[in-house]
Length: 155
Image (cartoon, rainbow, N blue to C red; front, side, top):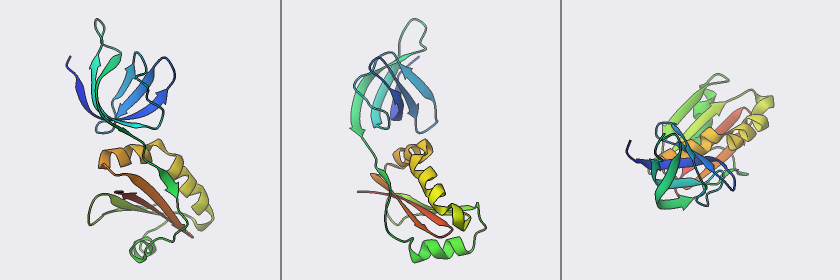
């Protein structure tokens, strides 16, 4: 088997090993040792399987390591987001491409569950994985009653 080059989210890390998930295809890779990565970090590089069984991997090249902050900000959703949400039923999601890098996700939720939904988005590993796949530098979560706007943004 050959090496796998890509962008990986560190889903678990301790002193002895780490687990990575390829953000392109969700393949989970267990490292036989920890090269100094931490849970939640994004690593761009190459991993190779270790012989003879090739069930664990080793990081052979690191092109970049970074963290992507995912935060709730004290700003209201934009007018565009509010208009999109007004046309959706609770539980629906619309994805809008940004004019530059990134995208915006508009979620419509029951009004009394807005804060809980926003907290779920911030804590969800999938949010961080999507941000890494999109190549953005930060994620902003904005809320209004019944609306959660998730903004995947460049720096």
